[in-house]
Image 1 (cartoon, rainbow, N blue to C red):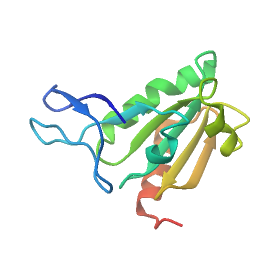
Image 2 (image 1 turned 120 degrees about the horizontal axis):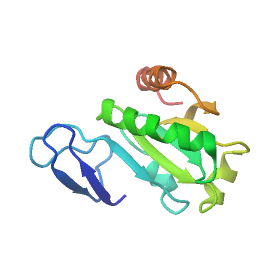
Image 3 (image 1 turned 90 degrees about the vertical axis):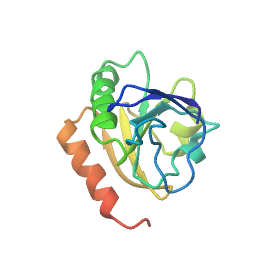
Image 4 (image 1 turned 120 degrees about the vertical axis):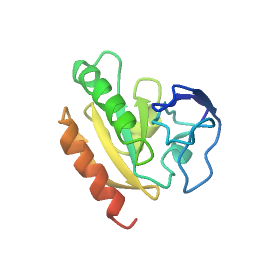
Length: 144
């Protein structure tokens, strides 16, 4: 992972390279949890699904209308649930191996991982409240 995450508390830009296992990224200035949303790839997928919090993976494509509907919802979830979830977006056109590995046949497909294992899924557009409920359930479940 490499990217710049903006702190919702103080507005600081934080360059995040690697987050130690079991931890979430925090702001270097105010130490608030950062919204953890980034683009993944086939090459980074195995490490992307490893985190101390549930990982919500969005399999999407830029030409997909329903995917464009879900994009802002996932951004809101990443901001509002900072420190409680990692959101990874996988463009299926650019990363076909990850999509094939999980037999993604329709997009958007959202998979929730806990401890590197898929524990829940949603196919198609869904409401933010339903996703938050699934993330919360995954958070309290023990990994398989």
